[in-house]
Image 1 (cartoon, rainbow, N blue to C red):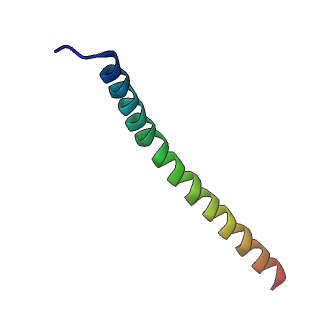
Image 2 (tube, helix red, strand yellow; image 1 turned 180 degrees about the vertical axis):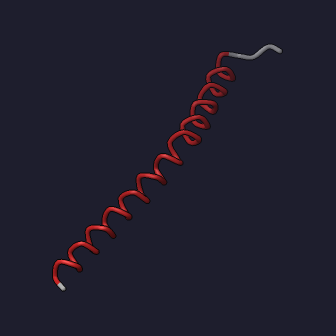
Length: 51
């Protein structure tokens, strides 16, 4: 199968995009959940200290 340089470049870009989404999206979710959990824990500690 013959592909032009443009097709190869486009396919490479699509592959890179797919890879980055697959790798970074779960990481992004974990970081958001981790930040939310940390904030909740901090609020809970403050709540306990005040009461």
